[in-house]
Image 1 (tube, rainbow, N blue to C red):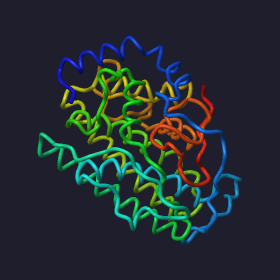
Image 2 (image 1 turned 135 degrees about the horizontal axis):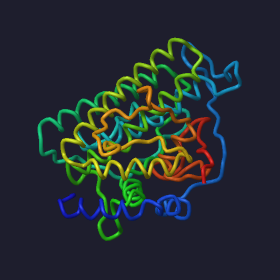
Image 3 (image 1 turned 30 degrees about the vertical axis):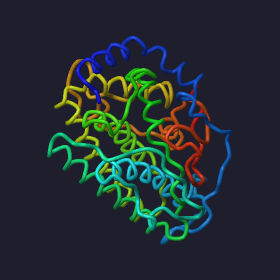
Length: 314
């Protein structure tokens, strides 16, 4: 678990290594987790109440967008279910157009405070409901759960942020503090992913649903960011934010819980509008690479569906 001396050392490493993060990720592929060449799997079937055909503007179909979101919800649900229940999704929520992938890592967290345990349990229930909802909306077009790597991917992400080394590894489930920092990696990405994807959806019903999920993810993110501030983990959050920024392009848009020496619970621009990530940028973060790739990081065999390739930002 993170003790005070480890936190101080991690903060010092993150301050010293900021310029090296992009080079580390570019060369190592996020600690050797690797990635494959660019291929597309194809979404196939029709969405319930919608269409799998490309949108009128030539963009991805509603099915492709919802399946992209479903991959992210699988990841979040598996992370939280293991933290609060010690086991992952039930078998009836992982199948789809292909056989489901295996999940590596994760275990129940020994929470120290009732409040954080309650937060984790509520978020876990929400993410489980999101998986159920998206699978229902997609019907027979729903992709199966992809292969997910939890432990090694979090170690790679922590090393990229300068918060861990081979000698001082990061275990997302070893303590309440570790769990909160690990959750922070996901929640901000989920908010920007839904904001970026919502305008691409044609069916108004799905647009409204995506907006509703976006709102829930924003509540989750604010909750996690508030706990980070309460626990004095603002500096590690900045290191994680910088690492995400090194993956998704040249723009410095990600914001930690500390910004210009001020507490920053709501990451937004000058108009108080949260920024967006494209599906490709989201995959840069979860694949843990700034390069074009179809797998890596938390998804060692890639995500399932048509939208499976990260952007080329290296």
